[in-house]
Image (cartoon, rainbow, N blue to C red):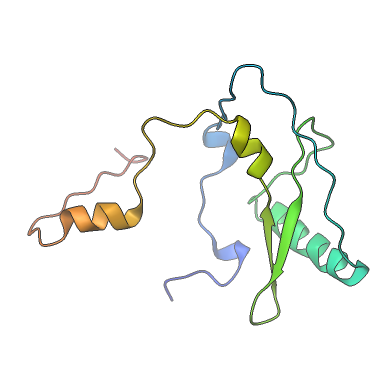
Length: 125
């Protein structure tokens, strides 16, 4: 199997290896939005999913934050839930990266038809 079936199978980069910072536009105000409403049954399922992500070190628990964006929950075809975050308001105050990482499709199109491929492992050297 190529794709993980659950969080416990994901091989990610542990947060202790680095820190990510979001550059904000000068004079940006704090973004604090109320959570979107959800019914009690969905709230229980979301709590269970969040607990799984914390145990698997996908996310970290925080006591409080000055910056808050609401969760968006969608139901997958198989009935499981997908948790996303609505960062639209945060995106408005973010500085746009002048050298963004290219999309995978762009990279693959660029090497299509080549005879030799070379990859560098950023962790092992």
